[in-house]
Amino acid sequence: MCGIVGMVGVSAVNQRIYDALTVLQHRGQDAAGIMTSEAGELFMRKDSGLVRDVFQQKHMLKLKGNIGIGHVRYPTAGADSVHDAQPFYVNSPYGLCLGHNGNLTNARELTEVLVREDRRHLNTGSDSEVLLNVLASELQRVGTPRVTPADVFAAANAVYRRCRGGYAVVVMVIGHGILGFRDPNGIRPLVIGKRETNNKGTEWMLASESVALDMLGFDMVRDVAPGEAVFIDEQGRFYAQQCIAMTRHTPCIFEYVYFARPDSIIDNISVYKARLRMGEHLAEKIKRERPEHDIDVVIPIPDTSRTSAVQVAQLLGVKYREGFIKNRYIGRTFIMPGQEQRSKSVRSKLNAIDLEFRGKNVLLVDDSIVRGTTSAQIIDMAREAGAKKVYFASAAPPVRYPNVYGIDMPNTSELVAAGHTDDEVRAIIGADWLIYQDLTDLVHAVRHDNAKIRDFDTSCFSGEYVTGDVTPEYLKRLQGERSDEAKQQRRDASNRGPKSVHIL
Image (cartoon, rainbow, N blue to C red; front, side):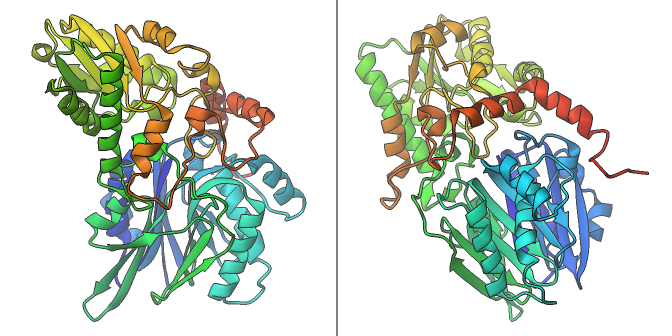
């Protein structure tokens, strides 16, 4: 999962893109990058690390121009080294810079075609670079000094024909404008913002989440529709075209469960209210299965589960307490690259308040259970703090399948619920009782505000992949690419430098 930003302003955009990326930092803490343009010249800064660490004052001063894009990344399959930091750039045609959130399911096949037929050269193993070169190859066909919006949309049409998977993309065409587009299923989010300035014109912004628009004073116009491309030229003129028919609007439901900030609105659905309803459904299930429960207190695993946990406590009629204090300078453990690093970070990330646990039957509420290692350590912490019994509730169903659309969920063998019953998972994580949200209840909780969206991508829970092209062979290959050992090998190789480029 990544965060992307694109902006066309009437004044310098460097600081505002930086600010937007800090608000989207939760979507990726592995690397960050900004590219801006002025008078046809490109300015770039990107590196591994948090936004605040990658950009210093000396870098910001050099990011000139009223147009630019930004990106925050966490590593996905095939893209987990410093050389995979985005945005990516190719100088022909026109100069293209791309930021991508998602994953192409046919990246390997596209790579072969790009090298053999399009005569493109790829420096990394990232599917984002593949997508960029597909677009570059299609724009190359224009053959004129300047492109029109019609040319850009024609190229986007070709990208839709060639690329499969889940993706939201921002592209800066140097000297021309910003292009944004979203996959035909709308799996990955992309919103449009607008701001009127005092007699200086209109500014436009594209971002992964509406919260980035809010903090910069942009009004949310709408979401980019599935299969739609939008283009804002350097003069601030806005164009849009539905490039391919929307097959079925199925946003990723894990955005609402975990990834998105609660103050964001995605596809006209409030993430906060969706999580409130997750808590309501979870409480109703607890009351059905344990009508005579002996829960003394409900405690959330900070931060994502707080909203659901409040509702669980209220509907169960028990106390809600903050039992864990979080060190906010530790990243989100789910998206840390490497099991050893994830395991070490849990106790440095959370500290239990003994008074809230001692002698009590505690219900811990989390947004989901993925590997189970974090849950097990948190349960141990609760017991060490003096809890009599530790119950565990997940606001999401069991995660039993990998996500192939941009969330680097571990391979099946590392998912604690894969091949295990709920009671076996309970024993593995060490809980006295375990309850999962039902998938039908989760879907109902999320879609409540928007009747137009009837279905979601629930593949990590159901194993049903909405693009229809995910085969057992693909999943087997992805499993090899996503193992921690494979990632470390790629990092070691990539740290020696991208192929065919020698750093002197």
